[in-house]
Image (cartoon, rainbow, N blue to C red; front, side):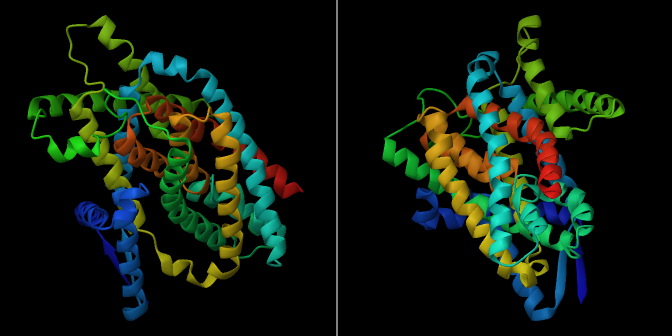
Length: 401
């Protein structure tokens, strides 16, 4: 097998190209627009299919260096923190608690479905846990962390199975969130607030017609604010790690952004803080779109081709379970309102994929139908702050059974 490594700068450049391919295709295909499929998802899936075809025809494995992609993730979540208002956090208290309970309940359900699916395809029950919360809600990182334990239970190719599930789950998660929101919005005749900018990005209509209002000065001010928050978040993350706790860097940067955004404008009112500005929306949109395009285009589909058969059965059951849970449990309990529909799209991305996928799903909905600022605070806090810890206990419990 031949191997070709694409360096970080070229990966960054190709990510932009892939994003624009997604924009072009979405504009031409009404189905993708109507069902809120994010542009980077469209472009990323086309790109990863192309690299898969290259592998099949030339036996060449293409790998991408992704350092810039990881930096973009930190930029994006820091921007969410800077956009946060204390009033949004207060109003999100009860929904946050409900969302947390629902998510923790779903972790158990996901492992039950996984074990049942593994039994159905005559695989060890430990494979069901691997095709459950370990790889889906947990993602690639949790999969890698737990693969040795599951391999010790007799699943020799545990890492390969887990990576395959996490990769396929990411693809499914990118595609189901928008259609779920479309269904809920149409059925219940819901729409977003008017007169307020989306929490992430610029609304599609405004993006198509706006000719300016962003200059180099306010864009540089946004970058400076982001960097200050990221530096503080990095130092905070180092201190937390030294105490024996481990959190993703983007979580501490998100929390730092929230603190700064709800203190600096009051302590230094003469300072123009960039929260809810078009310049910040531009940076957050750029960061999320490019992060997702780079993530999807770098997936190596050839690594999962040989494992896809039985896993597709389990993942089909997981997808059905996720959709039913969202429509009949999560959406009603979250209030049957517009915010609940946006969170439903996000939960579809998070339950089977990753937090950035969830945010991308919600962004696609809000850019078309109106803002839902509380949803963009609730889901990242639940997905990144609480779930990893709870998931570790549930996985351990499931494996012991």
